Image 1 (spheres, rainbow, N blue to C red):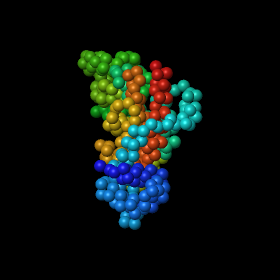
Image 2 (image 1 turned 180 degrees about the vertical axis):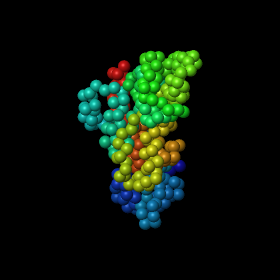
Image 3 (image 1 turned 90 degrees about the vertical axis):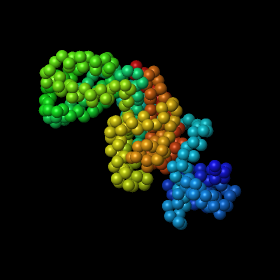
Image 4 (image 1 turned 30 degrees about the horizontal axis):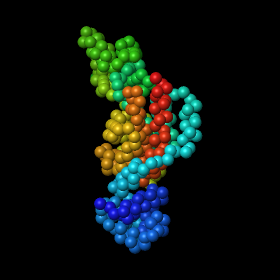
Length: 340
């Protein structure tokens, strides 16, 4: 259990390190934050806090830097107090409001806006809490044995998956296959489409049916149950940060964020209650994300869960991120309401 003074020291170190990126010494804390305490007293507290796992010392002569445990203490303090809304929010949303958008365009624009404002990776997503209604399914040939399946859902969400066929296919076959599926699919729930396709396939043995069977399991894995679409923006903004100098870890993170399924799992790994959720460092079960922090704000509207968030270093401006996300989420919810 931390004493009141230890808590003040931890929060001071976190605040200063977020602002400067430099290890924080006892004299800095004494001069800037705890002016009534001597540097020697604060140095003793820092030593104890290091033993307790709240602070690290990069080398003997350096100041301290916060651990994930210290960041958690800081974030919990932010979440427990009243926060002032972002004063510049209306100006930020001016361009977004000036254009009529479908949901996918709005997700893209918000993820890019978040990234530009914070120099982190912006994230925006929507999860359908009800049955998935299919608008159309198309196949784009990649080579003789592979095609990209594009699944367009009601509301404008688009999913894509690569499909490998056990034999060669031709573009004309894929066009005919799309036409057959879309005769059954348009505006219907995927579960109904799947049953109709299965009944149709059981009664025919032509080569298009064999192609369709190869694709059906992959499409079904995407569209069965709830469907989520997640878009990220501004991955390049983290490339120059000193927090991401390990090239191997950076490559693993970027590769993870390029996978649609991995992004969906990432968002689903965060608690689903409405409001703000923050996952710091090793709190994340996904190994590639354990050098990062994730801040998400989520809410539900008419059978859909809307999510916006930021992925960045543990040395993140958490308070600024939380206030920004809380202000932008209602906008995305209104776009979805208007799109119905």
